[in-house]
View 1 (cartoon, helix red, strand yellow):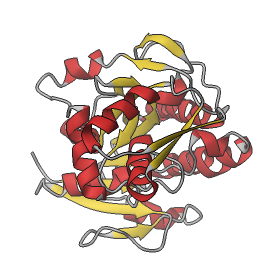
View 2 (cartoon, one colour):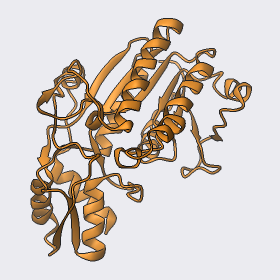
View 3 (cartoon, helix red, strand yellow):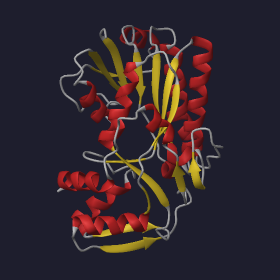
View 4 (cartoon, one colour):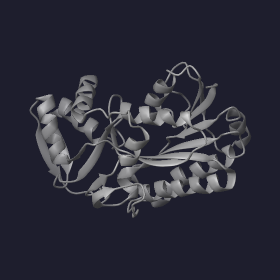
Length: 302
């Protein structure tokens, strides 16, 4: 395999940082990091402030890039709930602008992290990649629209893509200040205040996936730059919030109080995912058991 140029857009985020560390293990990868902030969090990797108002500069930066990981997101379901226009302006439009620019470069593939928890809507039956999609939050609507635009750029410019519809990610180093990451949020709250806040009855069902598993699967996209695929990137661990809290009690063994709060309209009451396609594509891959991932995350936070 010859050297491959890789760009990570959204490099300062949770997944971006871990993916950078993963890809740096491959000596054939020439890595560039991009983000909206002026400074990077990771050291010893070229980093650029992505200014979409300067397309000529971006074309120069991406002139030697073969594959782009697009991980950037400026919203979550809760934050987009009251600001759909802002979600379009901050997420959808920058995505299209960047695709417009890199479609004129030598980029062969875009890897896009979509949202398994929002694009399908609510369902008590397992959802495959081909299931009906009825997103009800602006965040999910934007994510699904971005997927459709990837198909447009593939049709028009032969720009291949991998779409990974990721479930609820958790693990070491996640920033929970924006409201993401229920597992990390609960562990931090237990560590700091000996209590957790649950919105609604706690019967909302979610799938949880460990960050190391996410970046391992994402890294496989560099092995084939010409194919286009869509996957539910989800583990075999689907639990209600109440079941998750019970598991936390078994692992952490610290006393804490549970506070039930008013239900948030942006929350999906139930989502069950079928991950058989990704297991078929990568038969030798094994997901990290939820209990092990939580133990690692707890040790890191402590």
